[in-house]
Image (cartoon, rainbow, N blue to C red; front, side):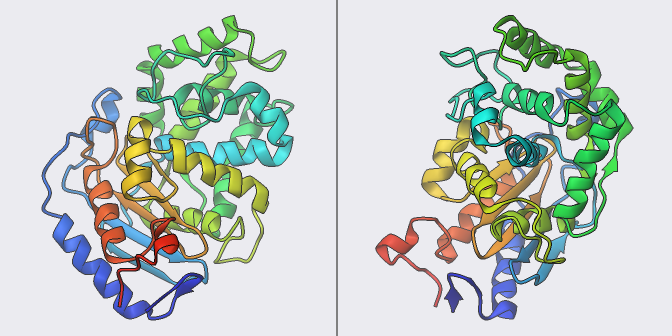
Length: 326
């Protein structure tokens, strides 16, 4: 039996997830990302699932302690950071909130000359320009890293310098996006473009494992309160706006299909990470490096499809009484 505010029978629920995981694991479709050379070294057989409920219950399967770089799964946190510190109005003077309908690194801006949303590369670079520009580079990075530590209930992310160097050396398109935005004069005054890009590359190069990232997702599911510590990390308003963007923009140019078929706020990264938020219930992390043509984890998306076929987690299942679990 499922409860909208939690999971009443946790052990049977975990048994169902195990069956789904074992059914999805043999999938051999997709290709590991190669446009960042260091990511091409990932083991395509790696597969992990981890969850944390809003009450702090945890469950993990597979390679759940294998670290991976956050890549684009860092973007919701950076958006929440600047939203919390500057407010909605200020942030959205510099970045839009509409799906782009295009690939995540396409060189394009909206009709106002702004990046389309914070969850594609241009918008994420813009958000990095807004993160505590009054601080020095080292302190800005520490500020982001410490926020992740609070989100995960005490796990400080590692930093993968090889990923960072690889990211930086293959960043022509991100440099082009930054210069395009500077040409349109949409950065805050006195933005240091190189420092902003460095922070963006550093955020993408932070490392967690599935067991830690699912706690961060659960903090969003709980409206900004970490289930493991009880600390309020972000306000409910910040989280609401972030989840709205994740629901509409979090899966690159697959976001509309994901919203239609799965109906959950999510954010993917080209490392193969996928964080999923089931509001008021749990946070979920899936990690499997082979990606589909949109840049999303093949096994991760397949797991999500199977999950909402079994349980009424789609945000609109409640409207039609479409619950699937006994």
